Length: 114
Image (cartoon, rainbow, N blue to C red; front, side):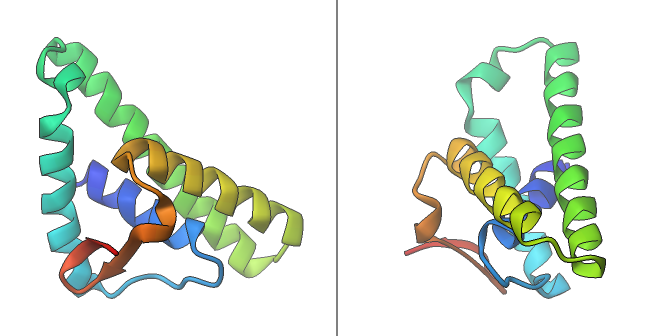
């Protein structure tokens, strides 16, 4: 399941002002970490297969929305839209990881908390 990894990568990049796409080498560890996070969520463990599928699809849509919005803003910058994207990404990241987004960094070993 790459969905959580895509979402995390997009949220991290969007929530850090001036952040650029991470190297591909950092993606596999992020995917594995995201799988563990999702697998540990009690509400997903007890959910029916269709409910889990729905959740994964929502995460995928959110990740793709964040990615395409960032790409559009790279082509045609808009200060207000960038600020809104960064704030939304920060909230989503904090909700998904249950930690302050300021503590989160993305590197070659994946996601790291400071």
